Amino acid sequence: MALINTSAELQQHLGNVASTFGIESITPIFNTIEQDVLVREYLGSALYNSLSTAYNSNTLNNPSNAHLKALHPFAAKLVAYMGMYEYGQELIVQVQSSGLNVSKSEKMEAARMWQVNKLEERLERGAMSAAEALFNFLSENADEYPQWVASDQYLELSEGIIATAEEFTKH
Image (cartoon, rainbow, N blue to C red; front, side, top):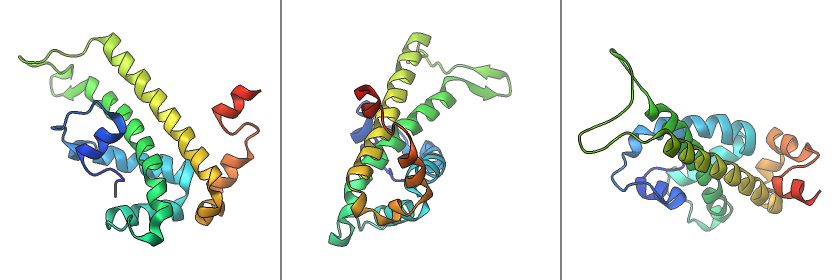
């Protein structure tokens, strides 16, 4: 189950998403990002499952889930940026029976390549920043997330000689 369920939530993380954007079309990508990135690279299964369950059962506001409520914006922002980046890749070119086509209508013109490149750069930078913010948040609050500390993801992320870009710039 996705950590972002409405266009309004997506807009909170990205800013420039139209309120009419159909979230249903990107939800499968969000689910893939959550499994491939959040579970395998950052949170681990136990913490992700706790977060997803609390979010999707509307229990994030329960006092016992305060730590999950604090974590949710960091995880959701990473999913939003990475998901939109992947979604954008799919929208640039459509595969149809007539071959590969670029979207265009009478009212809207297809984005120019430089515009697409700028958006991709912005989404990629946003995803990297969100990933680092997530890792920093978890590291600074590790005592609140024993499921994460017990995960392989914690070990892999903590073993790095230089764990974050911020740390890299210090050296």
